Length: 276
Ligand code: HEC
Ligand code: HEC
Image: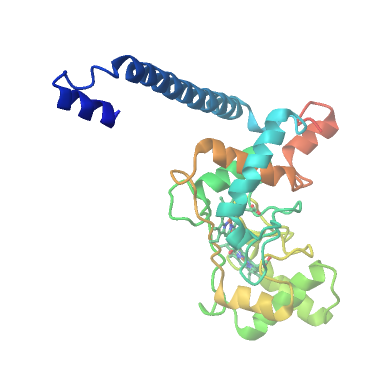
């Protein structure tokens, strides 16, 4: 093309005239190819957009686990989880007691019951994340530092809670611990009378063998003496809504709802509930 123009200039003909038909053909081909690329791009985007919309419009808790929408979402969710969450939650979703990061593969949930919509809410707004809609009802107070209980009293309360998770303990210490636990404003207000926890507060069950920070006496002592303030960031504004839902579906597919989950109760009454 440049050569043609140079020749045209040298022989006095208007620039580009000799090669005009060929360059026009090339131009048309280039426009066509470009157009096809743009259309292809729009096509891919439209398919993706439609899938995202379908996913977002659906009732997250009644999606059939074996539908292609859920399978696809779970695969996308896994990739996003590995990128954004695995650094704390582990590539296998099992968390870490040393860092107070919960296992996401079991049926024990700090908040709610492990349904897709509930997991999604936690991902959107986080826990003690600083976002106004984040879970942030209470913290585990520093019972020792605030001198609410003395170190010996804390040991008695530990004997009581360990006895609840079926470990033997000195019966006198267990009895003293029970009185302290059931005293107003000390423990039961947040962990409930039976110490089984309150999922609206994110206060864990102390009677099972599942621990967020660890169930050995030293770690339990630290939880009670110093208090705890586990945080999970909120992802609204950082990830697309569809990506957040995909991650929630991925976590749900790899975990179990808690035995108290309303969808399990509905399913066992025969009144409907989540399929499967
Ligand atoms: C104001 C509410 C509140 C009170 C009062 C409270 N807790 Fe907690 N506790 C929590 C919350 C919330 C957590 C979870 C903290 C987190 O997620 O970081 C927690 C966590 C714990 C843990 C860690 C459990 C684990 O799985 O690792 C233990 C142990 C515990 N509390 C025992 C007690 C005992 C014993 C008392 C009374 C002496 C008590 N708590 C009083 C709210 C409370
Ligand atoms: C900086 C570390 C960190 C990152 C990154 C992080 N989390 Fe968390 N996450 C935590 C901690 C710590 C908790 C427990 C908070 C508490 O004690 O209440 C938690 C709790 C949760 C819970 C609540 C589980 C329950 O039992 O109710 C869910 C769900 C969750 N995270 C999902 C995610 C997802 C999905 C991502 C990525 C998009 C993510 N987290 C990224 C640290 C993190």
